[in-house]
Image (cartoon, rainbow, N blue to C red):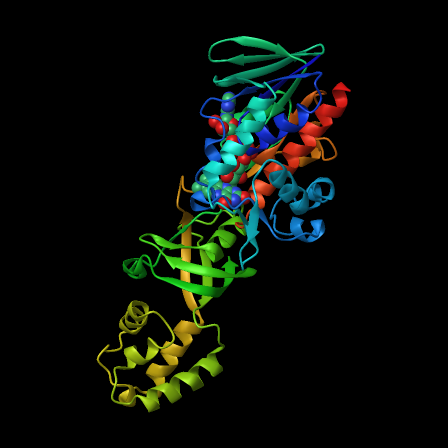
Length: 403
Ligand SMILES: Cc1cc2nc3c(=O)[nH]c(=O)nc-3n(C[C@H](O)[C@H](O)[C@H](O)COP(=O)(O)OP(=O)(O)OC[C@H]3O[C@@H](n4cnc5c(N)ncnc54)[C@H](O)[C@@H]3O)c2cc1C
């Protein structure tokens, strides 16, 4: 018999438990300070975006700003196809949206939670609802201390997610922790006048990001205005790739959005012909043919052009200012919206983890999986994929170890 303690009953810990339990010699206990698998409930807006339809594992790994190389080895063993097969085998059928994101057919994260829990209950895995505060190793034995008791185990899996508790346990066992930073966050902008447009969104916008006068990246995705700045997929990508730049009020990120997906010349020419065709209309109204109405009027107002100016009366200079603004719409991000991040960048240093087993290279018998490690992906199902894959690798290694 090998006794295994899994700290954290999120997607990664549960996956590790399910696969480790395939060896009847393993006696498994899952410790969770909250409710097992509750972290899956809000995923995908309650629909659980559990994977992304990229079936080439090297291509899949490119969606992770941190962890790409490490995940080559992980995904070569368990990637998108394996995830879908696994869920199929436990009664969760899936479908792929046009944007390649994969969801359960029921569109319900509750169903995913129930199906996983059923696997745990079937295997008679013990659930302990206690907060683990210390892990020590003496000889071949781990002492796991919670807020209530101390237990002994042969192996320990730390799967506590991105919030920091597991990283502290790992640090106390001698591991290096890459500083934790919020990623996949909304951004707070210096420009406040656009916050009245909160709720307005634009499809597939290109954004060029600059920091300290250097171009950082060009990214694209939907953009959403919020009451403090901007959000949406393109902004999540920006926050993720810029997580470690240290931007703030004094050194903001400069982001140039192309709101019309046309270059200046192309837009200006089209705008001019629309202005000519609708000479009697308000020029701001003509701009609404390209952008949401409230945004069009706000842009014209911010440029100090009278919103009542008729299209036929608009000067070349005024038109040029509008064309420049919509093709190079600059906002300055001063911070991320604290506490609302979807994922945490940073975690247990990947150099100290064997990607073939997820075992620590420093402490034998100690394993890591999920967001606790220094891996984070973009939005699209990549973070759950990391949990399924690394959870599987850890669980499978523990299954084999006992045999
Ligand atoms: C709102 C929201 C929506 C998201 N949507 C998606 C999505 O659609 N697709 C996607 O791929 N990703 C999504 N994510 C990210 C994804 O949910 C996480 O990456 C994933 O849950 C990480 O899994 P994990 O098992 O590593 O950690 P977690 O899910 O964080 O689970 C960790 C568990 O450990 C327990 N725990 C922590 N510390 C201790 C301790 N000391 N003792 C005992 N127990 C402890 C916690 O209670 C928790 O149950 C979303 C995240 C958020 C916040």
